Image (cartoon, rainbow, N blue to C red; front, side):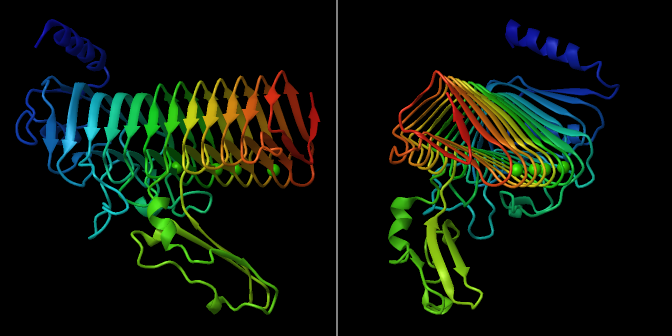
Length: 471
Ligand SMILES: [Ca+2]
Ligand SMILES: [Ca+2]
Ligand SMILES: [Ca+2]
Ligand SMILES: [Ca+2]
């Protein structure tokens, strides 16, 4: 052990041993998958004793594991690496806190077996697909559950890169406002600093870079800084908050790039029905006469099929689409707000929206975007939709939306509430067909709508439905 390492260990020990009488520090001295002195053994020992635990990987070698590293304790655990790589030799989770413990991980790389795609899935034959880090919140948990990652990278797992689940349905929780499941009274805090998530979620449908499922009472607090999410099969980051509670997210100096391509259009487009949409008069088309769900594809879950019927039961319209995903997706439902700040962040080349924030039921969207760029995303650059009571309040400062397939900046407000957007030094061009596509601000029904624009260049125009624009 060199002097620097020794000093670090001494410092960590000094700073933690006073925490509780039972606190234990484990120094890992070999890179074996199991047995005395291994990381696995330390996790088991820590899980069997009360108190705040520290594990220090003092062995510079990397570790190859043949099954998940599991901490079953409920006391906080901190793991300090020195840049080691932990590699999974199969399609399984790497590191789990299976009883909702607060978990802190520093200076470690977690790597799955890789090679996953829709044509080489990780969720067949009863497998669910490995995750790099999985924190499972207890059903009876209260207070705040925290996951803190510093200088951590995760890559090459089939399922979510990082998953925190406060939902009793585990991987079947589903996403979005319609997400199912029940959760504990606890809130979730996730802090990522200098975290790289790359090439994960390519082995199954709806597997994200960072996924937070929050149900029951409780909020999600997310702080993401100096972090990158790229080549994720589904969303770079997805936060799903259902029932009571809010989402409060702060993102700075980060990047969301080229995410959302698990349902690879270059493979699936040829499997779409020849007529992938249709609109009919009442009495013209029976449901049995339109294309049915796609079957026999590499993953039939990738095909969205929407059918609207007349009261008579005849088809009014139908449409098929391939389900692609976003750079950064937040869905907040039930009572509670969606508050977010996005600062000095790049959102580029994602296969659906760059940023897609939805708030429904009681509560508002409070959004601040500073010094950020959203470019070359397939749909909108930054999309915000609010429904139910509550409004949309947004500041866009020194930020760019350019060459997105949809609109640049979208702020939609429905039901009770107002929409107020302020833009200063915003720059938009070449979004969609450039016909009033730089900003879209919508006041759907009752309430006020205002858009104040200062020192901005909106070359592709403004679509202000029910909204007053002031320069
Ligand atoms: Ca909860
Ligand atoms: Ca809520
Ligand atoms: Ca809400
Ligand atoms: Ca509203």
